[in-house]
Image (cartoon, rainbow, N blue to C red):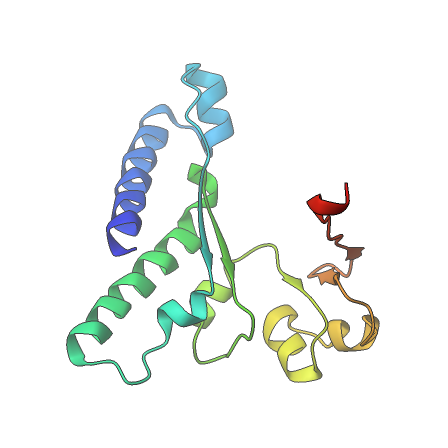
Length: 158
């Protein structure tokens, strides 16, 4: 994972330089001005809490986790303008696992049914606990309050 994040950080540095040279504020403006068509890049990590958990780790592992956290923080802070996006998910978020610098730079948040504490950690409000009934499987709420229903398609029943 660290190798991939280092590669994305290198792409970020390259794109930052190219956009500055052309005076473009973001990837869309750059692509329009140059006709290059640089693609958006998406880094997805399921169970990011498992990756960043330092519990029981030795010194070397903790240093590596610090580097991973640092790269994620840089990409969360600067990546969007340069077309690099993060999708980070976890089943049970913990305020100590996902640092505020990363969490605060994630623009779009989605939460399923959660208690007040988890809803507060994910959405910065209690709306997931208040607006999603306990029996509403597959129902989610976004950071802006949009409630939506996910569906399970069983290919065997199609």
